[in-house]
Length: 110
Length: 117
Image (cartoon, rainbow over all chains, first blue to last red; front, side, top):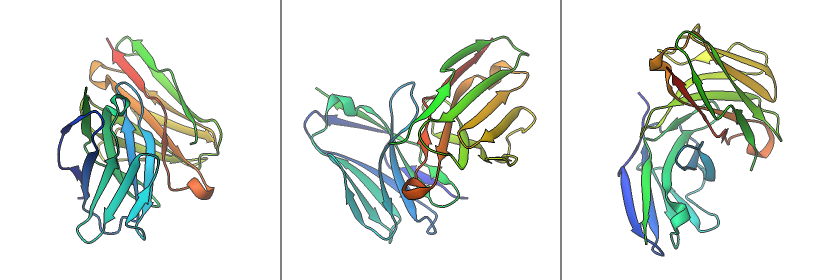
């Protein structure tokens, strides 16, 4: 069945460094992708999205890269801050529904 | 971004009672709402999808008589956990998506932590 996975369950990054969180998806028909941030005890918060007709999109301190050939997307966070500590989920899907990845916990080290 | 309000944020109930969780889209009309369940350190598990005025579509393995979903208006959906038991204890999160430019984005509520004693 469909799946969306993340390569690493936990990522530890020094404060100020850049973070890269990866995600692989299985459904080649997915045409829309979203990254969410979930802090402990809270609901997921939208970070950035990208359509399948793009391979890169930038936001404030975040960049999402999409490689449809290998069905992979990544989230890059520049100058990681303590407030970035959270679990990050990717979601792949489109019109009907999304499949969510298992999540990567980002730990920011002081 | 759009705001989805979920209430209550935390509820404790006795085994056998029913609990209702509300999900409201505050600044947009949610044509579709989703209900998820999340276990500790795990991803979101989709329980059901509901469109306003229609019966909810439940995912495989989710008991529709146990988890009653009502999407009465374009801004309100409710999830009722009927005859709750300790195994129903979990973190429930609603999500909504609307139309227009943000039609592909699902916005989430803050979640409801349910503890059944």
